[in-house]
Length: 303
Image (cartoon, rainbow, N blue to C red; front, side, top):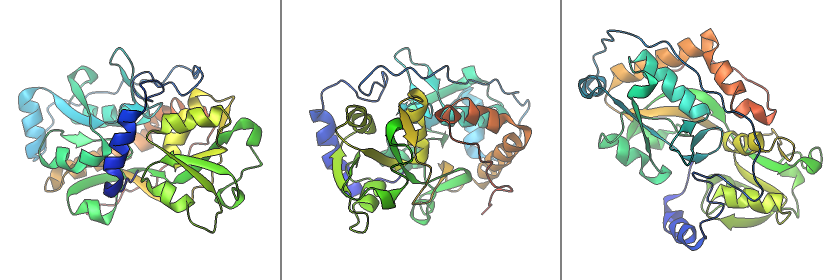
């Protein structure tokens, strides 16, 4: 998910102004009490005696822990509950890769990293790799390396179930109220005159979802993966339209110069896509939104 740096300050201000409820963070409430269902958590065979010519991996092996950057406020994607437990599709991807690098789940230290400091956290070695709705693009490739893409996301629309079939994509929202967060790329896209939408700009997606549930807006827009998470929480009330209008390939970010680690993680992703772990993780998390499973294309690109 891409956020314009120029809007970061405004986002912070609004975040502070928003009262603590519906923060979309550890409690994850967005108006009513989400029901959802149990979030899938898999066990993956841990590789032994892993030998890769990677300085990042060797340092992790020496400390006995691998540090993974993640999001904490995205239900069914990258989420941390009030007891500190992490869950979601991105968390499962992170665990699969860690297992292939020789780290069991109890040897993982997840670290919450906000979008605007991801490159800094990676380049400073504060995380060994990062899994959290991280769009691969040329500008970021100048700063970090990417394995993947492991998921092809795109900006989409979340609507109330009663509007399923009525709001069918960005071309059907003329005069409708659409909410997104300040400065987000989907917001800039949906504000284009050709769509004719009326936009509401808030600090967090959970606040947008609350307004959607309360009938104050007609749709919420951001990457479809994030929207599927909210739809999975309230599968009888919310629906993802399923007509992406941007391309956001999600990758695993890491040190730019560690090609050995990048290749090893790409190998790991391909392995779990082929052996069914990936599909099982998707269906137990984002798939609960009702969206169909689509296998990523393999082989993954290498550079």
